[in-house]
Image (cartoon, rainbow over all chains, first blue to last red):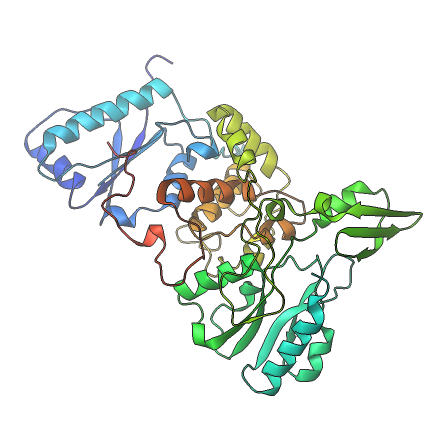
Length: 66
Length: 52
Length: 315
């Protein structure tokens, strides 16, 4: 499995990292395409059940960023 | 989570301001790299029985 | 601990007669040995059914959630801490309850007892230190210390932390005990070993939710397990779903669990799910110096922000 690429679910805060992701897009910066972004209204919305669900449905990693 | 048998690093936390696109790119790269090294997740994945 | 009962009856009777409370929650003899059941005395006459011995392990605080009447309640150390948690979480008002503090010396683990004998136990008679167990063809005297529930054996809050009436002098608190030996044992395992350990531990779980129902903290009107849109956790006995249920339930108890042992006690298949809650309890103590339910005026760590909160896990 040399060509295996991980699937990472990213929970990004609307006001912080999501903004950063947007800015990265505007600035045409390159970054790995393994992340699948879920926008949350605030990192305070994060709940253990979110990442448990993500892992259960087959994610290889979870990244929470405020 | 680590206590529950998920490898350390499978779940990552970070703090990036909305103006820090460079840091965002850097963290994405780091996270991806860390998880690549861990390999596919095997714990807590629900296996759905195949239906013929 | 056995001598408490007269005082318990006396206090409860007085509270009911004076009209200070509308009911007193305590214990009465269960239909099976070692299984005392909750008793709700609403008249002074019903007080006669109260009992108190080493089989009163159920956490009575569970019956206080969202009650509106005036209630008298018997409270061991752990019950009283859960009452404090209830007050903090606005599930009951302080002026609504009269807490009858019962200093506790630990409750008997009925599963440990039954495992010691071949046949069924018919009768259990206890005195201050020993227990005489009678069954078909056997009779044995055991030391009470040897058959305590594990959480009682490592308990450091035997005396109620909050009370209006007290039925006896406070007992000596245990010091010098290693409370988290079992947690450390698991912490030392590798990720794979942990996963395997928990899978084995949870294998017999039948998802009856007895642990959830016995727990005074589990009062959500709709539990996440019953939510169907979105469905966070499957309802079957799939290993992933079973562990998701137990992990998430433990997370919900973080910073609130008092290690009363009601969950483990109620489990029909004898799973020690306290290994999860205890780890979180240990973390709370180490990271925030917090023990649940000691003071109704202090907000719990997951409820407040302090600039000094540990944040090593954030990059």
